[in-house]
Amino acid sequence: MNKLPWLAIALLLPNLAFPQTSSPSDALALQQAGRLTEAADAWRAVTQHNPRDAGAFASLGVVLSRLEKYQDAATAYRRAIALDPKLPGVQLNLGLAEFKQGHFQTAIVPFNAALAADPRSLQAPTLLGLSYYGAKRFADAVKYLEPAAKLDPGNTELHQVLAQSCLGAKKYSCALDEFRQILQQNPDSPAAHVLVGEALDGLGKTAEAIAEFQAAAKTAPQEPNVHFGLGYLYWKSHQYDEARSAFENELSIDPHHPQALAYLGDIEMKRNNPGKALLLLQKSVEARNDIRIAHLDMGAILAEQKHYPEAIAALERAEKLAPAESDVHFRLGRVYQSMGNKAAARKEFAKVRALHQKEDDVASQMPASPPALRP
Image (tube, rainbow, N blue to C red):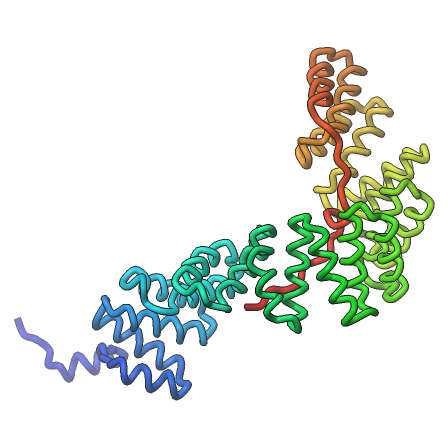
């Protein structure tokens, strides 16, 4: 069989690419020159030529991270670790690549490994604490962020994340200490007043918490969620007139604020205005379907109106949102009792006796976003 000459093949396939080899020194030179895309290609060529070169995979990960290709970087770092688990710095870099993607839970494992490899590291504990915070494991976050914050007293962002972690872990004294330091640095900060108020409320000092929220509302009357937080504290203290005014102020800023609508609806229900209450509660549920009190109160009003199937549906939704609360089982029991279903009623009342009602703090109700995480 006749074969085409190589020149003809080249003409037929003008875009044919032949593999090129690269040495680690070539790749490193490109990397140091800031030619990162070319450096990444060069490091890939090195790994293809020697697929057991752990250092080359680690270097490829570094370049890809600098190009902000964090998923590919993480893959390269994992390959390096598989080849040489003791290669210095790679676990820390892997953790950073996962952290940058917002994979906080995934980042915890390599940061723990980095800290185990170098217990004197100052960077690894901070990054580990931030990852625990991002993963909402607040008690673990405090364990690592507290000593890191002591070593860096001027780092306001770090102290704020520590304070939020203390709050999330319900370590209110720790949170209060941190938030008060932040407030000293910026006494006009509405966010700091709100956070101090949340910590005070967690310590059972609701009157002092109200004063902090009042200060926040005075400093920044248009700040979202501040009036809601103040209203919730009034509501919790059974000061319903003041609560109603605060919730209405929040709705003047955001007419669709779901929590403000829900608690305002609850106040109207307590004032024996079921029609107005139901309208507010329905608006709340339309805006957000996971606010327990809205479903609980809707169930109670619908039961009074003898709309039993709708009442049961609303109460069952409330029960799914907080199955350990006793009030929803009591109301379900009353509905079943009114329907003549004695067996179902007895079952719900038995749950009431087995459970106890707890009171939420304002921090659990506030929809404010936590501080952004930066490595």
